[in-house]
Image (tube, rainbow, N blue to C red; front, side, top):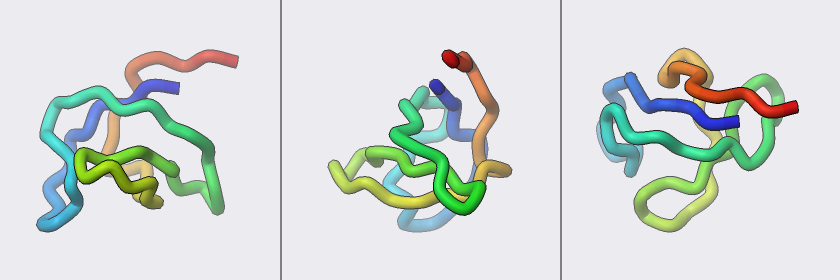
Length: 54
């Protein structure tokens, strides 16, 4: 699933309006490879679902 970052978190290592690939969903949060090259867990309300693949 691809999501677009629309949130405003300091030190989130995410770029506004950039698309990110969700690696997996864990406890209803998205695991995403951020701009710092780290896989982190983020709340879904910070993103807009751009493309969903089954």
